[in-house]
Image 1 (cartoon, rainbow, N blue to C red):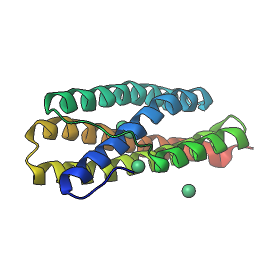
Image 2 (cartoon, rainbow, N blue to C red; image 1 turned 180 degrees about the vertical axis):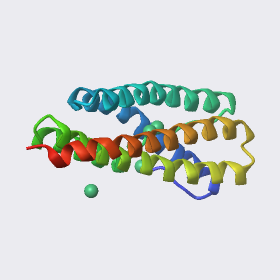
Image 3 (cartoon, protein in one colour; image 1 turned 180 degrees about the horizontal axis):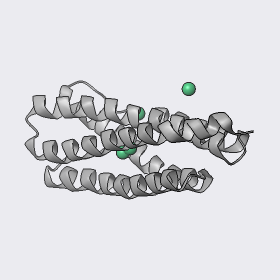
Image 4 (cartoon, rainbow, N blue to C red; image 1 turned 30 degrees about the vertical axis):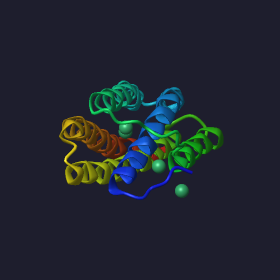
Length: 165
Ligand code: FE
Ligand code: FE
Ligand code: FE
Ligand code: ZN
C-alpha cells in the first residue's frame, strides 16, 4: 500500500484513482452505447467516450509536464459502478426502460467523477500545482456537461419508458 502521509501524497493517490476510473470507463462506455436504443443516448455515450479518452491524455500530459508520478491503484468505486451498469444491461430487455436505467447508471458515474475532480482540483490549488489547474477544470466542465446532457435526455426517455409495455 502506498503511504499517504502528506497532502501531496493524497493528491497523487486521488489523481491515480481517477486515472484508473477514466481508463475503466473507456472500456465501459462502448458497451453502454451498444446497449442503448435511443439514438441521442447512443450519441451521448459515444461523444463522452471521446471526451473520456481525451481526459486520460490530459492527465498523462500534465503529469509528465509537472514531473509527477502516478501510483498503480485501481478505483474500486468505478469498478462497482461499472458492474452495476453491466447488471442493468444483463437484466433489462433492450428498449426505453433499459435506456432509463442506463442514464441512471451513467449519472452515478458522472457524479462520482465530479466529486473526485472537485477534491483533486482543491488539492492542486492548495499545493500550488498550477500546471494541473486548467486541465482539471476542462475535464470537470466535460463531466458536468455530460451529466446535464443525461438529465435532459432523461426528460424524454423516462416518458417513453413509462409507456413501454
Ligand atoms: Fe471522466
Ligand atoms: Fe475511486
Ligand atoms: Fe448502488
Ligand atoms: Zn465522465
